[in-house]
Image (cartoon, rainbow, N blue to C red; front, side):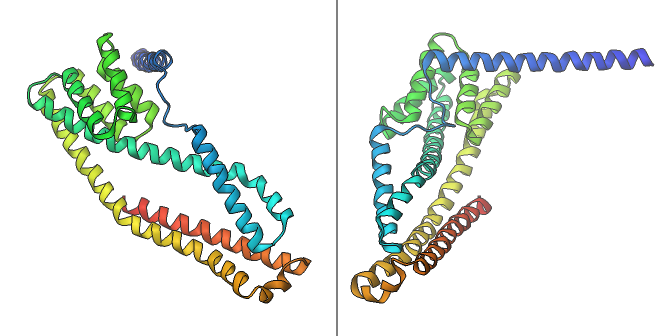
Length: 288
C-alpha cells in the first residue's frame, strides 16, 4: 500500500511538472512573439508627447485656479506643482482603462465578423482575414485591434498557431473576455467536434454580455456627468464671490487663520471629490 501511494504521488508530481513546464514554454513563446514583433502591452500606458503636454497644461491651469481661489498666493501655486506626478499618474490610469475598454469593443466586433465568416464556410485563418477588413473599415487602420490583427495574420503566415497568438494577446491585454475566449478557443481546437458551432455559440454569448455592459455604461454616463458638474460647483461659487464681492473674503487671505480655514475647506473638497468618484465606480461595479 505504501509503495502504491508513493507511485501515485510521484505520478501526480510528474504530471504537475509537465504542466508547469508546458506553461513555462508557452510564456517563453509568447515573450518571443512580443519581442520579435514589438507588440504593445496594454497593462501599461505611455503618454504621447502631445498628450503629455496637454495634461501638464491642464494641471497648471487647475493649480493656478485653486491657488488663486483658496490662497491668492504665488507660493501656494508653486507648492502645488509637487502634485503634478500624482495628477499625471491618475490620468495615465484613466487612459489605460479607456484604451482597454475601446480594445474590448473592437475585439467584440472582430469576433462577430469572424464568426459570420466561419458560418459562411471560411477557415478560422481566412475568417480572421475577413474580420480584419471590417475592423479597419469601422475603426481605422491605426486602431489597436487592426494593428493586432495585422500582426496575427502575419504570424499565421509564418505558421504560428492561432491559439498561441490569442493566448499572447490575452496575456498582454488582461481583458477578461479576451482571456476567456482564448481559453475556450484552445480547448475547442484540442477537443475537436463541431468547431464552428462551438465558436459561434461562444462569440454570441460573449457579444450579448458585452452589449449589456455597454448599455449599463451608457446609463451611467449621465450620472458621471452629474458628478462632474457637482464637483465644479464649489469652485464656481468661490470664484463668483471673489469676483463680485471680493471684500467679503479678504479676511481669509494673507493671514495664518485664513490659510488654515481655506486649507481645511480644500481638504474637505478633495475628500468629497474622491468620495464621489468612489460612489460612481462602485455603482458601475455592482451593476456589472
